[in-house]
Image 1: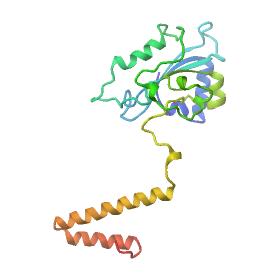
Image 2: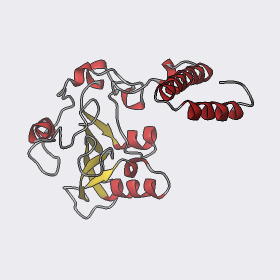
Image 3: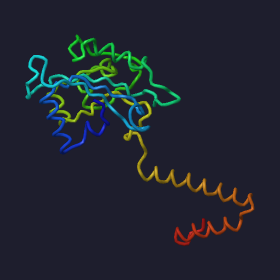
Image 4: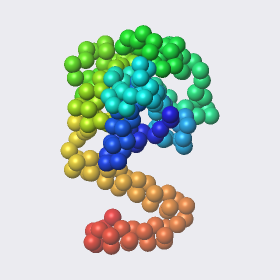
Amino acid sequence: MVVPDNVLFEGGKGTDIRRDLMDKCHLHTILRLPTGIFYAQGVKTNVLFFTKGTVANPHQDKNCTDDVWVYDLRTNMPSFGKRTPFTEQHLQPFETVYGEDPHGLSPRAEGEWSFNAEESEVADSEENKNADQHQATSRWRKFSREWIRTAKSDSLDISWLKDKDSIDADSLPEPDVLAAEAMGELVQALGELDALMRELGAGDEADAQRQLLEEAFGGVKA
């Protein structure tokens, strides 16, 4: 089943549905897909692999999920589309660790480092508590049903690799410094636009815009 990210973490009824799924079905695998695969460009999706009940008892409707295996094919991967097509070779590592059994019963072991995963930084997350460096950079990991319940409050939005393009909020300057830098860049851009308008012979319009700026800033001349 292909679902967008919000299905994995929405609260309220969303949480109830996930609990019911894990109770009545054997949810054994989640594949985190790159962006732009099944939905509109930029929408993030996942594939859930599950069977009703358990292999031993298809009619079982309680505690059917034990361990959930997650493969992260999204973090530090390209955004696929017409110019960067998603091909079979991108799925091959996942198919290998998934195994031949369609119900997820093939022998499995954590650890898969395709697409330079070993170069990823270790994110400070619940998923990486008690995980060693090597395991924390693997694309293929296992999480128990109990851990999902206690550590994630039954959210299935499970990720542990640090996106190399993400911004670490702790390393950002104070808000007033960021605001001052942004305003400085805007003032510089406005000055360049003013000069360009005058070079194009639109001096009167430039003066009018300067007047509007002065009024907007309470009479302070631009």
